[in-house]
Picture 1 (cartoon, rainbow, N blue to C red):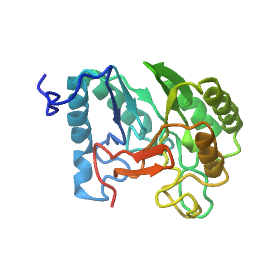
Picture 2 (spheres, one colour; picture 1 turned 45 degrees about the vertical axis):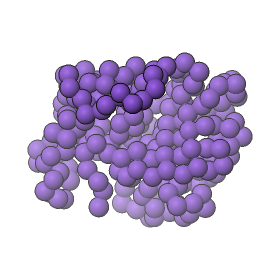
Picture 3 (cartoon, rainbow, N blue to C red; picture 1 turned 30 degrees about the vertical axis):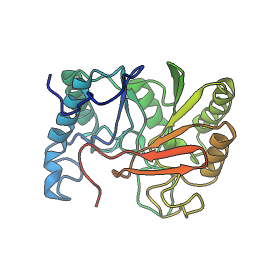
Picture 4 (tube, rainbow, N blue to C red; picture 1 turned 180 degrees about the vertical axis):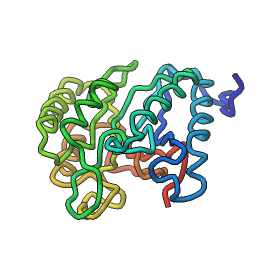
Length: 250
């Protein structure tokens, strides 16, 4: 399959994997489709991106969340998810999943009219996608997938993930570590406000997470959600948000 990616000037790699995010497969007439005209192109754009991913023949793909435009409580959520996963399978892409807010629910914020995570929604996600926090090794890398959507919720799963992450990072201290989560810990600075802010992890989980990553000298932190590409070198941590394949957020 032809691809736009030319590797001829790149040194040979030990392996390659692809990170994509926010594909937002959209049903015709579904949630938010009247927000702006190009919403109608989201599913086609997702398909084009997925075909490019497949053409690269990567060792694996990480999908950073927001598979569909619908929310879990909307009537079209399950049909949209079914169609989105069928599209990925047809393109030959079987990702490793990161839970996003459109897949599971938003961060808790009493100042915003959002869709918070519920225990029932988390159970449904786990039945469909498998665990929402996990890790695996790839050559000399240790890759960690986190569920940002349950942070600060007080759900039992939040403490389970916290305990697991602390143990997992300690057990892989001799490896280079990359962490993936949907919601960015911050956009401008680690002390920025979180209430009324749709695009960052709230406190106290943000401070706990950043201190833990620093203590274990995590090399890379990847986030999504904002649909734009930002990067920062925070000490020795390379912090990057990845763009959406389907649209830039206004």
